[in-house]
Image 1 (cartoon, one colour):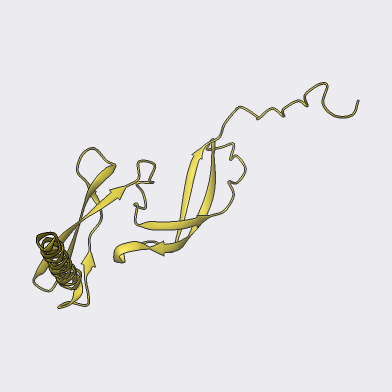
Image 2 (image 1 turned 45 degrees about the vertical axis):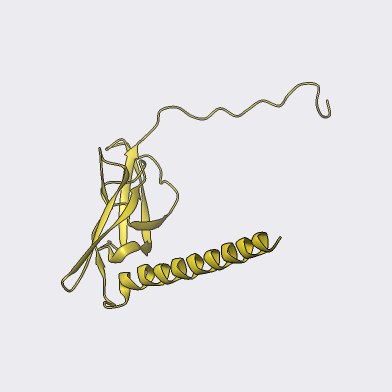
Amino acid sequence: MQHRGFFLLALLALLALTSAVAKKKDKVKKGSLGSECSEWTWGPCIPSSKDCGMGFREGTCGAQTQRIHCKVPCNWKKEFGADCKYKFENWGSCDGSTGTRARQGTLKKARYNAQCQETIRVTKPCTSKTKAKTKAKKGKGKD
């Protein structure tokens, strides 16, 4: 019985010790990113393969350089990058001379000190199809 109690006490002491060491390591890791440097400059997220998906972003501060994981969405607009977030207006009417419709966006958020334009204009081809209205289901509702 005494051996069991001693074993349990030793196990609890070991768990407490490893927990304290783990917390200390976490504090060192968190502090290392910005403790010595306050003005980090981050570059764009560069995908590891193709033009979207998981990749790395490199940051510099003085003589220090770090790389962090990042993700480029596969539906991003290449003209203004994945780090510039815009609030867009509704699409305008179709311009018959160019065959395109346009809308304007105003900058909502620039991530990682990205150099973003305050306003942008995007275009897309006009669609020749018109959306058909869905018909009401028969038998449901008033006749």
